[in-house]
Image 1 (cartoon, rainbow, N blue to C red):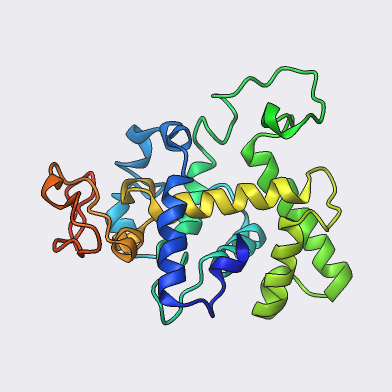
Image 2 (cartoon, rainbow, N blue to C red):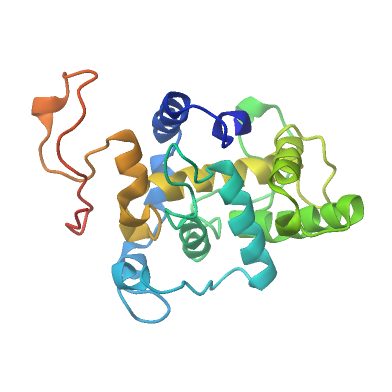
Length: 245
């Protein structure tokens, strides 16, 4: 999927991919959020909307991990002439905030052993919860980049970062503690979610993801436009909290 998100893709192909990505964002992941905490306050005690005007301070990720996440999501959905990217949408903030939800702690999963690698149709079988996947995966990728390129991931040029991400996606890099494909899938899925979620969760800043694909957001009624295929939605999106752009 990485190939569809490269900066050189056409406007139509990028928009098509992003539209399809919406269908791949599972409701269960957003259902794991604690809206009572994520929608009303941040660590600074300000609203999510107010916080977007000032630099976000990560709570889960340390400085090196935060730099990695920002550099990685910037290549998964880059800002280019076709539209805004993951950094514009505040995706790193979304992912960091997700790490303090029941979802990231694995509280919604059955996490009793034994843990054995099984066929894909059996679903996720590892003992690692999302927080562990990120912590171990980032450290392992940074060790690989240091050994292979003598640089950190974020200091690699864009093309080399794409190469590393592509190798992770294809499971062509041997990482310690976590399968490369599992780490990439976690990162890509959360990047999609952060780009298309309601801003109440910390991502989709200024609803740039919704505007990119013409999604109306949390409007109470837009049935008049459901069957008007190919006709742009004439009104901007509305967030759960009533924010408009």
